[in-house]
Length: 441
Image (cartoon, rainbow, N blue to C red; front, side, top):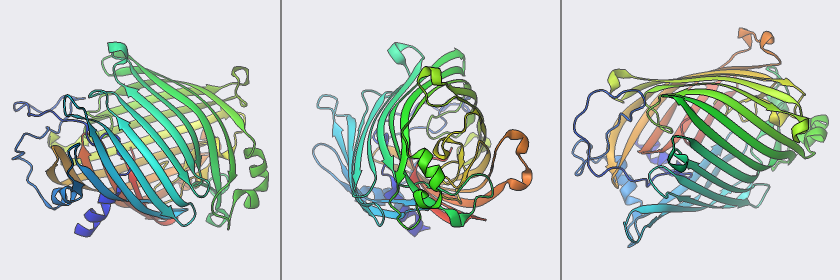
């Protein structure tokens, strides 16, 4: 276990808020939290309730103290079933406000190497104007295929109201996904790598209706195509030439989505209690400058049951039903089931069709809590089960088409909003090891 925990320290490469300040003093003792209330109490100096342990000592040993704040040197490691592991180095450099001395932004450059992508240089900058809002700037360039320029902004109180807003603009090329063919019977032997190119923008606005009920409006406009990926032994252009010919042309995707969302979870990134449920309809029309006429229907529920409201045992459940109507879309724009889309034992894009059903359950068990630079760090294990299937239309769904993927995760959580995870899954697709940042749901 000690070796596993040490290995997981390297996965905090996309930190989106590691230095957000917690209150200096803990509030007085309080009863069990109400829905939507953060249940984990902040640290109270000298953090008597959270004893220093091996994890906190290792994190502290990685920090270099400077006049501007600590610099933390992390090995940078990522993993993908199709491209394999990437290795590198990533310093985390916090910048303090000259007047308040609080850390208001964090720079995270990195250099890594992958056998298919070659060397990759990445620059990340996280800016926190206050306790709620944040900006993310990210740029990356690889020797082979990969490139990205992304800017992101989020605020939960637009112009002082309860309206939540997020905006993202990106120019992105990734060579990590693969295509295996359509439907539940697509064969592993037909795996073919490709590079997805996309440029555009997206903004999401949440309007509060009553208490925890929101009307969600999402607009996005992207133009996309595929090109040859970095794996030259099996590419979509060679294995699926007809699909490649159609998907390699630039296409415009203008989507407008309307959702009704209920959310009483206690934390937007690291929930321990509450329910999130949403029903969404998105549409794209040629008369609105899109190249396709289609609609996508989505129904999603996430629930977090906190045993005895102590935060040590959390049962997390997720279900998603999604399907499309209208024009046939290129395979990269259809619902997918794979490593990052609900079925962790499989590669990205493993199953593709007009619809999918996903069910995930995991038991998140907190093993230790310790202080780290005025933050709470936790170690966690989580046995899980993923179940999912794709289908051409809902009436074609059959239980025998379901794929099952049990496994377990080992995680490091640094509150208020960072989680690094190593996930190990197995099943009919073989085994898969995933190293990434963030909870799966």
